[in-house]
Length: 74
Image (cartoon, rainbow, N blue to C red; front, top):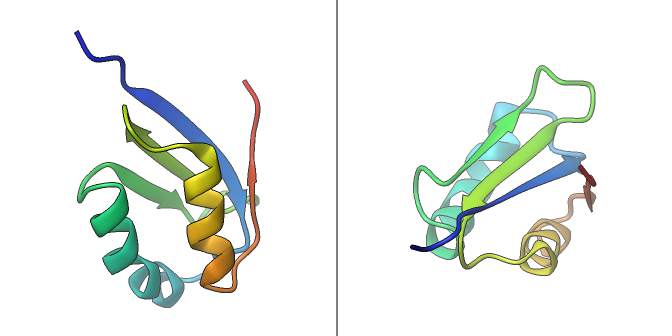
């Protein structure tokens, strides 16, 4: 059985427009339906559910797109 990791990040992604900008790369790297943003949260939370995606990759993707991204610990 494959273990699915749930990664949670504090980001600077504050608008639906920014989410739309990121959606194609996130869909490609993480998989459509495996990620979501909580824009109503003060930390603009990004959650990723995937057995194969590392926190480093997610941070890299957002940083390359001009956004801050920090993994939150449990």
